[in-house]
Image 1 (cartoon, one colour):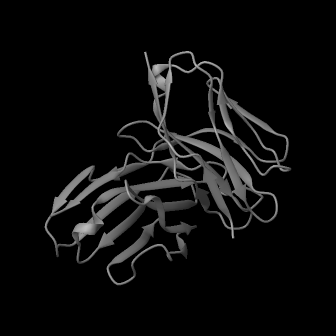
Image 2 (spheres, rainbow over the protein chains, first blue to last red):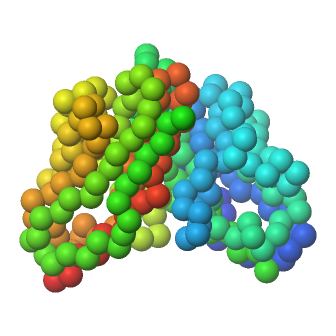
Length: 117
Length: 112
């Protein structure tokens, strides 16, 4: 049963520290998304990639967040320096693009719960 | 621009009650429409989808019909169970963008 995996599942850190979250998309999927979920803002799209190339990262605070796909099996989201307002659950999702230039279905990972003190 | 509006929650129902969660959208062209469900402590998972006008998506007793004339994709279930308690997200995918536009989510609580 193919799944998206994310590590770590939980992270507690202090303000100013660097945080790196990792995602392994489902093998063969060519599109990867990063989301952030909070009670106040709901589900926000931070960035997404197609065939490892970044398509849109306009949802990310550019000064502290960065997202990369060093290879097809790994996507990373980094926060440096972290702030208390970054506390949230971060989800990675992957999918395949269709002939209509859409993603037929997004498969979500279990999320990384980040707490910045 | 593209957007999705869904009804505010929480929705609280007794077991075996009828469920409707409203969803309307704004989009250019002919988007695909989705309902995702999020159980506590988990990521979202696809519940059902429809890719063209008048299509009906269905799964696990849930249904939604793509209504282009009213730009709606309301989620319905005839008899809810306690296990249906979750947050439900309506979403659209506009051709050529690859990304989804998600609604704000509607929390459903079903009481035994």
